[in-house]
Amino acid sequence: MTDDDLDDVAEVLGAPDPARPGRRRRTRADAEHWIAWNRHNYAEHGYGLWVVETHAGAFVGDCGLTVQDVDGTPSVEVGYHVHLALRGQGLATEAAEAVRDAAREEGVRHLVAIIRPENLPSQRVATKIGLTLERRVVKNGGDALVFGADL
Image (tube, rainbow, N blue to C red; front, side, top):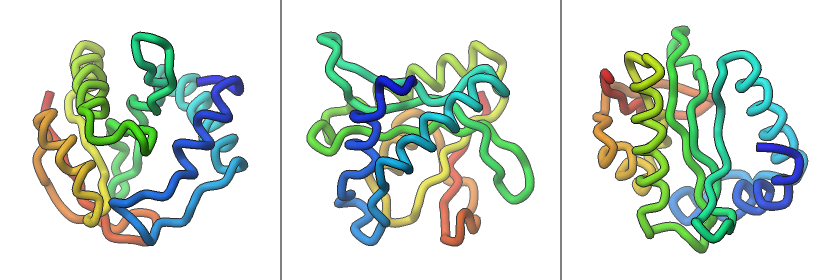
């Protein structure tokens, strides 16, 4: 993910989310921060969220690994965001499966997905890649579900 992806990242992150209608719309500045945060992740951990594209090169969204704090413990999370117009086509699942497999190959022992309770599509992606509900936590000021699996 580079600065060249800013327009596409801003469009994906800033889109209204039918699964979470009360979520604050993210701004272009948020997208700039998102890209910088991912660069930091690459430098610190060797991974982050990667740009997902179609075979024709069209921007789909992002998917990858980040380290997240879960109740004071660093956990490797699979995260994914798909362009609103492309949701429901299995693209997030396909990308998340590839990321899960890459995590396993890199020696990640346990993988999580931190998902808001109202985000049912994201929960379906997590279960399709083999994660199961482990617990509820408070994350960033709200309830969150932690799906996980040993790899």
